[in-house]
Length: 494
Image 1 (cartoon, rainbow, N blue to C red):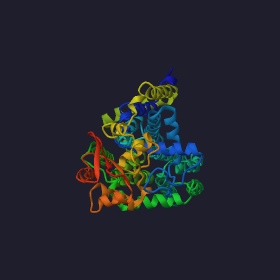
Image 2 (spheres, rainbow, N blue to C red):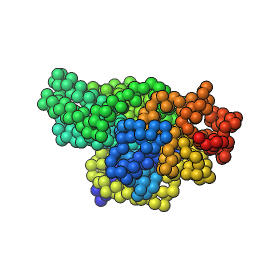
Image 3 (cartoon, one colour):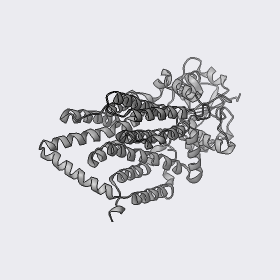
Image 4 (cartoon, rainbow, N blue to C red):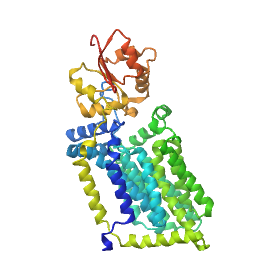
């Protein structure tokens, strides 16, 4: 009978899936249009049978060379969209989200944390991961980073080779799913450094350290198994090193501690400080380094709070468990009760099986993409749904100037339309992105910029500066406006 009971880890993973497919699903499409571009590119790959290397989606950089850094995710998203619409795409994101939460639990348990503290850490991780629950390829990086960390912790704990053998394949897949794989290489490098120090100090065997180092080298080489080889590393490093892009992209800016997610991150940091100050539990070198790596990543970029969640939070559970054990040994009654309850949960977990949560998870996905699949849609209050229904792009003169974050939606809903640009700023480049911002904010020469690109109609927010400028220009006429979008057309098309 106990084999039918879901384990605590399965339950927290199932809860994450329900949250993602429940209240999380409409939020996925509330303000982020990039999912539309990813599906559109995936469709193109499936139709052509090859990974595109030049742009065919914009009129500002037609034929421009681009780096396919997430083509495999785009194919998966397009396939899911073909099967179940945007609800299918949301289901993919929900699965990656739930797997990440489940692996946070798995890392903590593998490192020896009690079930209660690990459940608490995984629950906190669930809340932090909600910050970036969007149906985009970065979800693959979060899940694969968690899987890599689990494999490395498992291998280090027993000095075993088995878990290491999966790493080269993991990185070969990762380099084609999303450009975030360098953080995985950084984590792998941290474990290699820790292993060599451990070997010098007599903590780890030299044979295992050599095996880990060899696997790390093979894994690094495996990232070159992608359509552009080493060019992918160059592209990713150039983009992340571009201070202009980092400054204009909100998710790459530091966390706002006045927002709920920022307060949750701050609370996690304070909790770590309290645990360490309370009993000063033993912290192994790789544990402290992983925690600090995730913390530095999160403090530098709100987007990297997900990194903190999967490589840092499990150690809160580990350190809290050690602190509780230490307090129980010294006769603290509350700690003794917590330890007894934790050991009971451990026995239940050992006897439980995965069949029931897997069944419930499959049912949740079927319900989400079936009767409730209509909730997966671009929010008309945030995207120009009504505007483009009233004036479909096919009825307008060519060459559009669009709000950047609407570009992906336009490509998805009207695939024959060529946009000015979208959130794929690393392709469009700094020069064009600056020009877009200058036009949008009415910098001197803004109208000449529209002329230079042959723009014949615009689709922008009513309160955007460019909308005000077009309203006062004798060369443009307003043909549509609602609370979300306004359309202007050139009086005499170019």
